[in-house]
Image (spheres, rainbow, N blue to C red):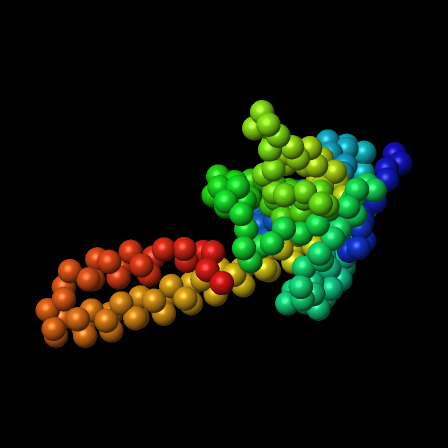
Length: 222
């Protein structure tokens, strides 16, 4: 019984391989071999049926160990890039895509972001952040049809968008969330201080206005 299992290198990992990364975080010591097969399946593209029926157990274990080694390399690469600026451009299948202005996204981007479930569809995040060069996110024609919809690049991004760049995107938004959370907590402390000061002079009506003021635009503040 001959079988072939090919594990991509850290440099060769793409968004479609993020499922293997998620699986690594869900190790089940009651059924470890199924866990090995799940990780190898997500990375190699081989079906579980193939791994169960065409492969010897030592081959699957060897492929799993190779997967761990490559993820360790990916982690080391990510550690060097996590706080570096995102690539301004990226070329996929001969097409050039450029990074949208994540510091000041337009309304279309914000609406799509609010309506997205990036946990279920991680490719969508990359498709939103990188758009065809020279275009505007959410740009429409005279009939109000989106000119460059996410679906038009989804397959290419799924197969070719580097996983390391996807992880950089996550790191960017995590830093942004922390910054927003810190700003929010600071604003809440400010509200408490102002409320105490205002209560001394009887301006209770201003507290509701302050609450609205400090809860506005937190996620997109600079």
